[in-house]
Image (cartoon, rainbow, N blue to C red):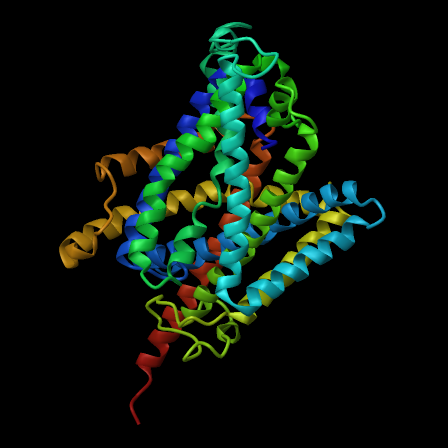
Length: 449
């Protein structure tokens, strides 16, 4: 809703192509993740798949990196939502709003899984409704069917330097700007493990991802660059507001403020849910403190199997929720106190982690698909398209994005800091495996008594 303005500023009308490329990467990753999650549902989702495919080091690394990513981004969302609320009610300080949001969503996630679903249902309904209304109004404006509007046709797509005003380099820069807008889709496969029919739930969610990406992301960008010249957009300002203002919607800025506010709270809710389930799954497999396996009494037992299957049995992993929100509070505090120093380093350290996670998902799918075809072909209810060619193409695309980020002055620190954080986690993972193997060899060398 806001960040797309920066993409339009560098790519012009070709931002539509940038969204198509980034959306295709996200869609392919979701298809791979959906294939594995439908065949082997687990609360840890891709962390469990990575462990099964590549070894414990991979499951440990991707699980902890993703958990760290969610709890750091959670701080950005809480702070941004607080700033909007502070604008509405100046008498309440932003930190008080942050505290309120964190407490409300912590309580909701501690009580029952259905509360997370209820919040997400209403949040999603408002977001989807807002985009549908925007697309309808924008479409009417394009054809001059709104009061005091004239048909714009293709003028804004071909004028002001043409469809590619900054060439294909602008499209590439646009991809770097918008690819992270698709982060968070992975949470649906984590949530699927807690449904009555995980394979069916994840299959339905992944299949609908194609429609959502084309309709909501690409469709809204096409409306924006068709209704207004791309030169009218500014980085940091919502292009949705600019369009609504142009077609005469009263209080467009406040309307979008409400939509953005709801979107931020939705992301906050989803990230708290996803992070708690990820660290719970790590604890199940012995990769996080076992004390995090405590679940609410609705569950028949505490903890689960070492195979990565969820041991929640319908209950809520309360200690995992509290652990995630505790670090979330720390992140928020750092964001409030040192946004340009300590927290900026933390944010940079997770800036490219999403791409590393996606790459590990693709690598895991390459290994597991071959294994499933041999051992359990009936479990492949949802299959990756044109395997293995599209999987390899996705890996190449993700590597290309990372290399391009290294050539971009603004994105380079994110790649370098994220690479450092990833290397640190990998070092810990390999060290743990080495110690365990060494201990196992020493025990096996002891004489029997």
